[in-house]
Length: 128
Image (tube, rainbow, N blue to C red):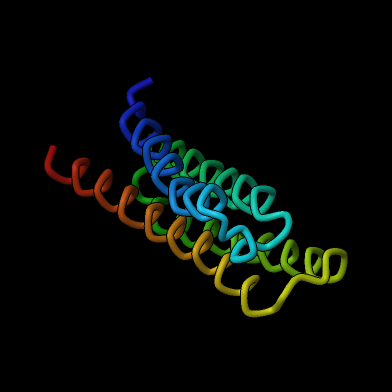
């Protein structure tokens, strides 16, 4: 598989993304993490991985469909995350401010990774 570099960078990114919450947990500031934070962490990370793999597969098959695939995967990820937020809020009743900060930390950093990694991969394809 020639797409091992984006997957390796995703693994490194997930490890680096987990460091600040782990630091909060082990320094006694666990109250700054929403109960169920790790479920959110793995769910959003899994969605990012699925979107990245889908976009890379589309790019390998048909490079012209890259932009629609990227927009579709991003829209799908947004909708699934919003459904997760709705279910999470109804079931867990978290502190609103802490939940928003935790969710935005996860969602926007995963989105930034997805955009940066896929654009970097697209740029490498254009140089060939």
